[in-house]
Image (tube, rainbow over all chains, first blue to last red):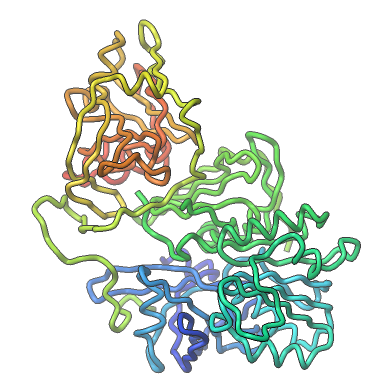
Length: 256
Length: 86
Length: 202
């Protein structure tokens, strides 16, 4: 503990919950005020640590949803996993005024900043939208005009996180296009895709290979692997495709 | 059901040890010679420790355990680590 | 800064049930947690074999079918993971190491279990004979699932569960002990849960 503090890199800090916002039936955004926040880059995550009164601790990683421009406020969007240990606490128990212990920002690899340019292709499966939303929010706050396309796959319209805000961002910027696909149920009159991502869909949505897009893919492991494999098959450079997989449960289990 | 994640997911564990952004360091696999940044390697966050594996041959590049206030770091699987300045 | 901090209303998933069957520091787990240190191997049964190699008069090898002609046992017992969960009354079926090792002659004192995917764990020979260890391929009456080590895993229930190597493919008998995957990374060379032999120096 002491050594980490001396290094000054990863220090556990307490943030106060200043707002919570249900996003869908299963996801909630939690906004923290973090006076000691050193700033982050879009795409980074934090480690959250819960401590029970008897000292028992559980630790998980969550992507930051907010843009760096919103610091020292930092928003996490958490999906509740029914058999989870941490996510039910964060989505159901934690309320405004509570303190939450976290450390970060973490991870320099899955990061996009406006000056990295584009064109940008973001591919999100389910709650994999969260770190990509930080990129879109940063892009908007920095008034970037980097040509950006988002392909976002959800189970149903009710599962789409940040639905209204994505609409607003799209209306604000002619350089942002959002394509959505709903894999399980779609409402009458739905004009988006209504199937799992496939080669045809990515061929239609992705930038031409010659434009050398920067691609960020985030979602459950099979989703990420499918999307990345298709993009490579279409001829995109593997080194310009960055992936962030969520585990099978999204939560770290203690193994054997 | 396996718990494969990206090396980027282990960034927190690695940041506890390395004084530079380890996910951007480039590792050459001692087994097959593949060369990739740690952030793009495979990581397994096992309850007993964190294992970073080569994306091409699955060999363990880096193993880290955090036990009773000390870190145990095995990097036998990496023959060269390239770290960018700054 | 946060030495005395706790998260209001957080209790964690652990059950507070006590049992004299729990070694010190362990809690009771009803699920069967899965987490692997590498990809789950996909070895077709046609390619599977189990071998005993190393310091033996004659190496021994069984194919999947040959392995199933060996005398089998059903074992019901408790398992204890070093990450602190224990699971009671797990039921397995397989072949005892006693049966397998009876088919070779050796003067070795130690065993390295080796596995698909490269995992290894070391054991003193005397800790795996006399009905203390098995190669199991059935869990709760069903073929052992790949995430739990199927087609076959080692079962050494009197030691922490990392010794019960998943996806086991054989035993290498050796004269001099050498640490396995976790034993070389700070985990105890022996691993008795009742003595809390978790780490080096315990």
